[in-house]
Each structure stands twice: as structure tokens, then as C-alpha cells.
Amino acid sequence: MNLAHLLHRIASFEPERPAILHGAALHATHGTWALRSARIAARLRAAGLDPGERVVLFMRNHPRYLELLLGIWWAGLVAVPVNSKLHPRELQWIAGNARARWAFVDRHCLPDPAALTGLDAVIDVDGASLDAWIEDEIATSPVVERDGGETAWLFYTSGTTGRPKGVMITHRNLLTMGLAYFTDIDPVDRADAIAYGAPMSHGAGLYAIPHLMVGARHVVPASGGFDAAELFALGAEVGPLSMFAAPTIVNRLVDHAQKHAVTQVEAGRAFKTVVYGGAPMYAADIARAIEVMGQRFVQIYGQGESPMTGTALGRHHLADTTHPHHAERTASVGVAQTPVRIRVADAEGRALPPGEVGEVLIRGDSVMAGYWDNPEATAAAIRDGWLWTGDMGALDADGFLTLKDRSKDLVISGGSNIYPREVEEVLLTAPGVREVAVVGAPDPEWGEVVVAFVVAQPGVELDAATLDAFCLERIARFKRPKRYQLVASLPKNNYGKVLKTALREHLADVS
Ligand code: AMP
Image (cartoon, rainbow, N blue to C red; front, side, top):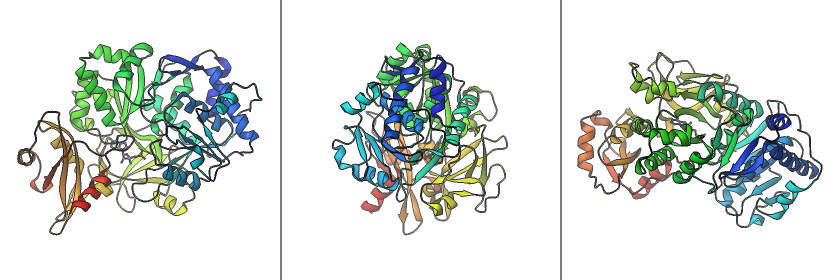
């Protein structure tokens, strides 16, 4: 099954259905999209690219992303989506590692396409040649058949621990992910619209698939990025929109709604569903989000190796406020999505009883085929059919998973395990605190000590003594930060994740 059939299928019976919007303006119907992708595929095939070969996409969010992605799949090729904020040298490394033959690049990300070497062609997506191909009446290509187990999306991990690894995501993985959207996230109506407020090179772009399955619309904001005001305005005009957003982005959306006194009814006109995940969403933040924007949030937990498909905390769970475990559930990442099983295991892979913390394992058709060209890393990550996520967590008796931080983020101080997230949850409820990240710093006496990086709300002066007193009243003494660093902002990656490695490096530099 080639994912390009999803486009071919809708375009065959409903070519006039609007498909891609750039801002509020129609960019392509499903028929036009299919024709353009088929033409791109024909060019790629004519250039001698064979099924299974890799093509890099290095561009910001743009309607062309969807046309190129589907064109690459249509030709039976593998898309290598590269984070548009990467340095050209990182891009070069990925293109080389993937042994990519072609790349489509956006000049804003790579001002000099010739700087990317070792490929047969580097095509400027804003250049005349791509437009000419797409509009040209050249022969189109039929969809090249692919087996479900063949790679569709070669996704490079962010590489916070060493070189990035290429995650081989197959057509079957993405089909599974797309169908699980309907069962576990949200039923998609044909009248719906998915908006791309987060980078399309990541999970947000993959949400094109469930929407393509029913012929819904795809809205690419004109700014090509996240702008809360733009999204609210777009939503009011062509929405309600569904979208994926990392927790920091959700917070910015909620800030905007609060600042502009947007009512829940207005928020509902602009947004149907906001899927959040990819990083911890603190209990205080999701409670505020629901209070301001209403019950339109769904959480997912997954990772590049099982994209968007691990657990889900549905809106019915979040809305079930009278449930005796509501608070714990809200702080969890929900239950296993339909196509997967979740296990919390000890170091040998044995399932642990409810409540015990171990490594989170995932098994199912959404789990990657393996790491590209890296059998050792694949063997370490997939054992006996289970994906070892590197996340620590505990299941409750009802199957709700609570994450406890990644194993590498765990702080071990004086022999005791401290989960940074638990400390962060507490500090976030302290008056005047806007954002917090807790990490461990090396310490000669304790092995590690807890350090909290704290961002104050605008106009608020925080001091360490008050924060310490606040923690003393709420968590065990040994868990409370030994040091506070009051900072203006936290380092984050392109997807809004706090870069704890950068914070740890900063501490190592100053010590
Ligand atoms: P990536 O492969 O870049 O998508 O990162 C995946 C990692 O992000 C996971 O292994 C988790 O550590 C983290 N993550 C994903 N979803 C959530 C979530 N809902 N809550 C907390 N952390 C998450």
C-alpha cells in the first residue's frame, strides 16, 4: 500500500473538492493536488530515481510541501523531511547519511542551494523550474506500488545524544497512525480542516494523512509558522481548525485567547481540536487551556520511532471531571492507542505491576522498521518486537500511563531518584512562575543536585527563598531544588521542546 493512493483515491471521485489552502486562499483542489504530485513523480522517475531512493525536503511550511511529499511517495520514493531550522552542515550530514539523490530546498532555509553537495539535484522550491514542471502538460506517472513494509518517511531524530539516527517509517506505520487518529484522537469530518501551525517536517505534517483519508482541507498559514493571532483569524474564516501543537505553543495560543478575551464559543469557532504532545504538558497548563478555550484538547504521546502513536488522553477523559482519578488522569498521557500495546518494563523487559516505574515499551504496527543503516541501534531499540522508548513511566490499574521523564533526565541525588517533572509541576503552581525546567547538576557531595531554571511572569520579581519555602510545603525535602537560576527564557528547539541538554551544558560550563 502506497500512501499516495489516498490522494489518488479522493482525487478520482471528487477532483473539485478543495484540498490545500494557503492562508484563507485556495491553493489546490484534490484533483489539482493529485495532478501536480503525479507530475512531480513523473519528473523524478524520468530523472532516473528508482523506488526506495531518498529525496530530502528542507523547507518551511508551505502548500508545496504537501505536493512534493505526495509526489515523492507517488514515485515510490522515500521522503527525508529535515527540520528547516537546522544548520546547512547538519543538513549536509543528513543528506549524506541518507544517501539522498535529490533535495527540494527553500532559499530562506538554505540561501545557497549549491552549498548542498553530493546530490544529483538540489531544487529551489521557489524557483521557476518547479513551477514549470507543475504547470507543464508533461506525462504523469501512475502511483508506483509499494508494500506496506517499505519506508515512506526517513525521519532523523534530533540527535541530542550523539549523531541523529534515521528512523525508517513505513507506509504501513503511517496508515496505522492515520487510522488511529479516527479511533483515538478525533473523528475527522469531510468538512474539517487541519492547520499546520507546527513544522510539517515533524508529527504535525503527518496529520495530513488522516485528513487526506476523508478529503478534508489542509490549511497552511501564510506566515509559514506559528502565530496565534493569525491562527485565530484563519480559524474564524475557514475553520474550525484542528491542529497539533507542542505544549509551549498551546500555552501561547491560550495566552492570546486570554489577552484578547476570546470566549469559549469564539475559541470553538476557530478551533475544533488541538492535539498536544511531544513534551510534558503540566497539569496547571492544561487546566487553564480548557478553562479558557473549552474542551477541545486531546493529548498524544509518541516518538519519532512510533510517530504520534503511543497513548492518547481523549477529550472525554479530560471532561470526566467527577471521576475519582480525574486529577491523576489529567496529569497522565492517557491510554494505549488502538493499534498498539504499552508495557512498563524492568531492565529485562518484564511487565511491572501497576504503579511501578520502569521503561515504557510500545508494540504495534506504528513502530518503525528500524534505524537506517544502523543495525546495532535497531537491535538496542527493538527487542522481542517491543520498542524501548527511553521514557520512564508507570501504568495505573486502568491502563493510564504517567510519564516520569526520560531516563537520561532523571536526577539521582544522594542515591535517591528524583523525577524533574514532579518538581516542575509543583513550581509551576507557585505565584508568578511562568515556566520551569528542572535538571541535575554534578555535585561532589550528592552526586547530583536539583537545579531549577525559572522564568517569571512579566513584571514579577521572584526570589529563591520564596520558591524554596513553596517547595518545602509541598514536596519531600530531598526533591527540592538546591539552586534556582532565574532566567528570561528557556532554550527550546524548533518543536518547542525545552533543551535540557543545553541547560545541563550551561551548568557544566559555569561550575
Ligand atoms: P520525538 O521523537 O522528537 O517526537 O520525541 C519523542 C519524545 O518526546 C518522547 O520519547 C517523550 O520523551 C516526549 N514526549 C512525547 N509526547 C509526550 C507527552 N505527551 N508528554 C510528555 N513527553 C512527551
